[in-house]
Length: 396
Image (cartoon, rainbow, N blue to C red):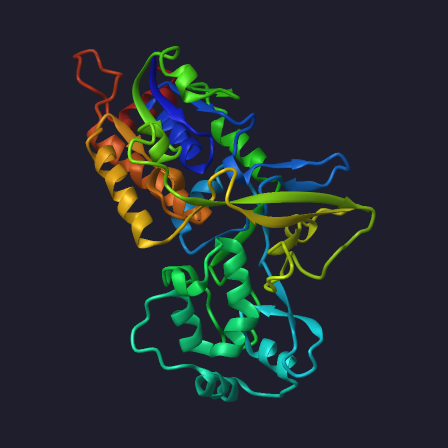
């Protein structure tokens, strides 16, 4: 009998499995329908020996010392600040050029052949910004900051490819997260902690799950296992609509198709990711992993990303009718107290990796505060996590 069955071996499931096993001393079975652990962060060495990410680039960044310190139990880090360039046509010459993304001082000066200072570029952007009485859509967010021309160059085509919707049809949250800068900071993220697991994400997950109280079974489905694995409680990190048999219909997602290529050259592009906003280009970006991992190798591996309506669920589509549908599933989840729903798919939200870790750690705190331990002392009183840890340390 397992104390917990956890469905999903990505960040949410693995973090919770380790906490429950190590802090509560309880037995955990982790299952995943994929043949590997790590969820979308899974990385591997390809046939040429280049370390690459099967599901596109995963760049770790966070402002939380607690989250960074927690993951540091399972990996050493390689400091890495991600940089992105966008290929767009200069409004002046009409020629394609690579410029920093997010838009910053250098982006404007290179595109328009200017020599603006930080204060001058702020005024330059303000002069081109459109007045929008009420910010409702993703289009409103961008044109109100940088104007119509930069919106068309950087955002409209990319967004239409990524979401199969015009930015005017998408919630403002989609582009609200994309900053514009008036300085020369060309880092894609500005978080305090920016790094890559030194030996890769998969190795980090292996260490996280390497606890004697944890059993992992891969390539299996919950429907196969739920009656074959006796368990007291369930943690579900898969799609919430799937758990309830799509009772109210499927929640809409956008997916991605990844085309991996290994090239017999040391480097393909100057930075980790190059975006291609133009609608006539079928892919949205190309990523090159050696920039991120620091690996030295005579070959390099790159990934082209093609947005798709079909495939694994990656991005919840942020429209009011989709959120209303999720609320119906959320009500079902709230009425199912014996199951804990955790992670992107279970809560129909896009999370960065650190946010999923934070959610999992917070969920563990709630579990530890409210769920009695199976282990009991001689008087039959449930032991708290600290008592279990003390007993384990003492060899009891």
